[in-house]
Length: 115
Image (cartoon, rainbow, N blue to C red; front, side, top):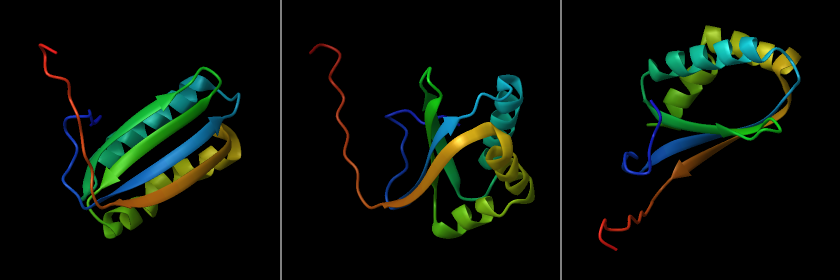
């Protein structure tokens, strides 16, 4: 489920930031795998949502949100996700970085409709 600015979980929770640079491999294959991973992740206990974007040069950021560290560890070692990780290293990405953060607090602002 994509998260909007309005439907974030209440802290504390975890954010996994996956920043990647796509290779020039088959984009249909990549798209199918990415859709499957979103579908599979959303079925995992402790999954809270995600948001993702990619620029035309292939640099992308996906942030997934998780209830706790155990949920992240379970997702990281899920058998089908492990296969996707292998495929990503072998042909889908030039490079990537994964950062895991505990969100302790957040704030938000939304302009009133008449402002």
